[in-house]
Amino acid sequence: MHSTRKLRFVAVMVGGVLACAPLGVAASAAATPPNYVALGDSYTSAPNDGALAPGAPLLCLQSTANYPHIVSASLGASLTDVSCAGATVQNMTTSQYADQPPQFNALTSSTQVVTLGIGGNDNNTFVDAIVDCFATDALDFFNIGAPCKAVFGSTFVDNVSSDAPNIASALNGIHQRSPGAKVFVVGYPDILPQSGNCFTSIPVTSGDVSYLNNLELTLNGMLRTEAAANGATYVDTFTPSIGHDACKSSKVRYVEPVISGSSGIILHPNVAGESADSAEVLAAMKAAGIS
Image 1 (cartoon, rainbow, N blue to C red):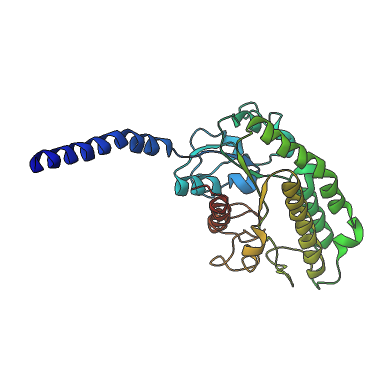
Image 2: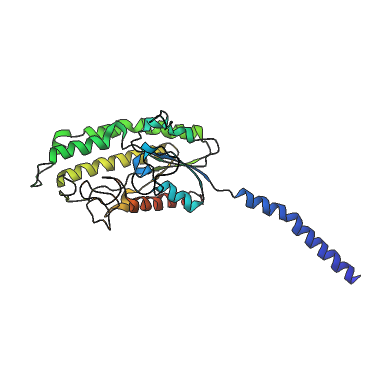
């Protein structure tokens, strides 16, 4: 009788293990990599920061060293990166090039994670500010005043403010197409020093460095506000990049200068900058429960 009870006990235990086995297999199968879609402009696509991403339109200058590729590799995510150099918020819903359909076309109901890095090209804000300030400051070798600010005043920050409804609309468009996705709005990194200037690398006076810094802070502030108001998480890449601006040496900087740059394209993140951005994005995702 004692032996019989032992056999029954073993049989029950083995049966229980076998009964649980399918549940374990099912749980393992359910842990599939997240479906991640990256949307954005050149600060996301990262021109000249490495090999061109296979399959991406050539004019988008999308690099395999950009933060979406780094983040997706770390997460083991399934990545669809449609970021494209020169993109505006309008290119979320309209084609940028013949071979670059609207970026929102990449969104589906099964998309689980979305990053959006956009706004700098809207209203030509960055390009106009850079070109206009270089033009007004080019001969100011003695670093006198803020000629660009004197001429253009609030023009550029007004452009940023007027773009806020467009960013809000884009975020709502993401939620409509991918209602189950967690959305992250990625801000712009620190481009210029917090004080002073480096005229031989970036021909802008110290006064206008402050003027342009305020513009970027205004843009990032608008993106943060719209993210909070429209169900998204803002990722601050500006604060962590302070001290790594385009005036620093090639061993320190995250952004390339206008003159004597060593990689990437001018006033854009280099490989180190994209890597630093990826760390902030990844941290935000993990804090949101994505792993």
